[in-house]
Length: 516
RNA sequence: GCGGGAGUAGCUCAGUUGGUAGAGCAUCAGCCUUCCAAGCUGAGGGUCGCGAGUCCGAGUCUCGUCUCCCGCUCCA
Image (cartoon, rainbow, N blue to C red; front, side):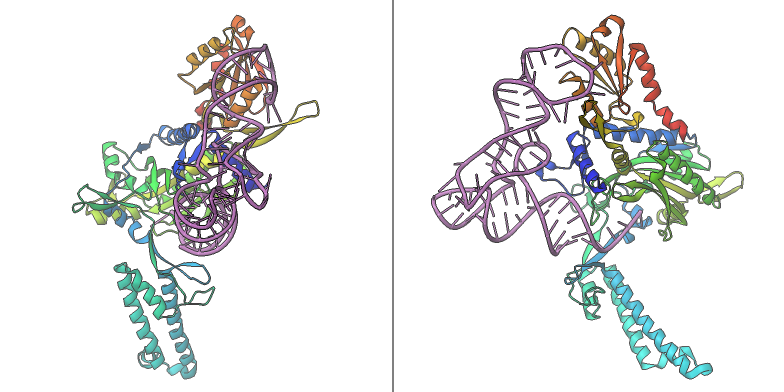
């Protein structure tokens, strides 16, 4: 079956069984916003726990925080988001292509420069040795005309950008007859400002209210708390600060189910190191993070690294861990060497010293940072997409049956155990309840007595419950139950005390953590 | 924002030349008691996305509008 079909089925399966719902579906939904349902919330919680424990419990030099979504507006100036996260966009009405207005103008300016260079090259050829480039540029009428054009354009361009004057930007495009590379026409829509950050007002009285942003990434909450954590926790380099939290981006296009949402959750760790050591730690965390993913057992071939050639303004090395989603290999996690960009920038903007005294080197410096940042929702989608399986079962009498199973790694499955009385009388339900009451403190259990046993197995398969136990009449006598494995469908007769041992063994998160 | 597709029960869909909504599955109750779904009986559930228009009469025709999905532009 085509991957796209699987993806569609996965989406409706998620809805049907209560993993993911469209936000505000009652009101026709809200684009690129989703809610997690009763099982989705459990799965998500388990993923978070796996990550959080892998970071904070397994590493004594990593601690976790939970910073607020609202932050001081200057944080986003310091981080570069105010400048870099807002784009003026314009559409060509003929080709239907969309462009960044500022880039169109930049490219046009490059062309003007190229014209000047062409004149210079031509002149060089003509005059040979005696050519004086500066003299030529200062006197040649064609060069001067172009230079004048460039100067005027540059000034108008800068003014327009500073004032966020979209009308002026459009005028620049039209006045200079900048054409669409595809259609070749100058038939443009108005230039509109797209800011990737959501803003809101802090303070209820409008005159006193100031504009603040919903954080577009969680990292800054860690950076601004660097000194707090380092000092109060007596942390010594190298050490890390981990955080799980929501971030918000007003994406122009946000699609592919929960892969790209406007409101999403990140699991992020910033690791602070001595300058010069960053590449060592960058490599270390690349491997560690991959190991975390591989431990889930979703197939080693489904992962790959993608090293960035073009680096963001803050980074000196960056790689993605990509996963083979139903729509292709896509970014799941980023590992970035962020240098001292963020801490230095906050130092500048706040006017406070953000440094670490290194007793070994006997000096103060701004630490370098290696970041690991994984999308929680993407991890969720990865697990769901990888778990979704349609199986054919040979019933023996020539008939073929089909079942849909979510082969979610047992340790993070939303429901760990279903307890099913074979019939709903003769005291079997009571026995089932008794078992649940004993196990429910440690495991998420579900009780079901409706319909035939086979149907109940299928329902548990569909939500990824790793184990079912069935209570029959003998169970009342010998305290034995039948345990059934989700993946193999094999059944085994065990005693109730054994049940707890098996669950402890098979469903424990420790199994995963030990592999990292 | 542009282009294309779609919107009828929880889900999948049917609905004739316009005559006030149906099926299967699911849900619930009861019966049956069965170790890998689809036994029997009954019940609940829909302003046909929303709003106008044409018509005696609109799920169906016309217009508008909203939302979702796909493609394009963007992506730290």
